[in-house]
Amino acid sequence: MSTDSTPTPVVREAQSSKIRPHHRKGILIAVAVICAFLFANYAIFHFFHETTDNAYVTGHIHYIAPQVTGVVQKVAVENNDRVKTGDLLVQIDPEPFDAQLADSAAKNERAQGDYAREVELAKTRVVSLQDFAHAKNDADSAAAQLRTAQLNRKYTTVLSPVDGVIGGRSVEVGNTVMPAINMLAIVEGHPWVEANFKETQIAHLHPGQKASLTVDAIPGKTFTGKVVSIAPASGRQFALLPADNATGNFTKIVQRLPVRIEFDPESVKGYEQRIVPGLSVVANIRVR
Image (cartoon, rainbow, N blue to C red):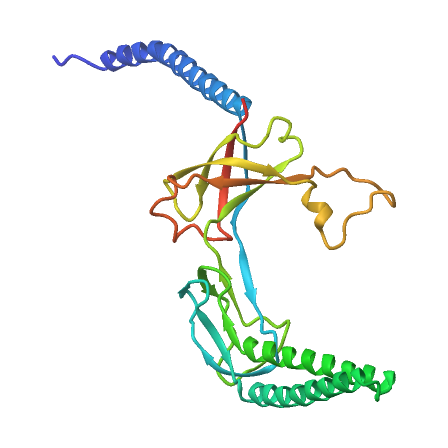
């Protein structure tokens, strides 16, 4: 006669249900401990540090515009080229300026000669004071025009004012260029970080404090630096149209102050070409 073995799984199931609450309690305790540990770490970190992701790499960017109007004869650089101080950037056709220089030189020579004769005549008192003053004014004016012509001729050769990298080139051979219209830009080396901290974060910030910097474009690498200065006013004060809180309804907005942080030279070795103005940064400063 066959035996029924169904009670066995029922016993095991009952035993299993008795163990589960014990495991659940242990899991809850473990999760609570981990959460408490993470919260404590977070609280301690933010007690000793101030952090912002409203930070960017910046640097000196020199915009190059001509000082005379003329036709471009030669462009000696391309975007991303490295240049040294004094390197040729753009050559403007010098021919019209050579003609102007020659004409000014001839006029100056005549005016100086006339003035020299008036000086000799003045010694014998056979020249009026009016004629003498007129000759002197002509000589001074001709000398000034010659100097201007010399400078204009010099300005046809546009040289690099600094060491750096070319960017934003918009000039081509044959273009007519004129003052105040940029032809290209030179990005100088030695960038720094401008971190915009909230006004509620700057109470313990001061120059000389150590900073750690992570650049979004260079993941996995943490750079070091130090606080150099804090802006004399919030960024809002330098806006084209600063807010006027004396009129209308007032809504308080937390302001931000730019903090300048310079990279430690040893920290950026090997990354100089990759750290360029405009990159996003997370800045962390130890304040205590």
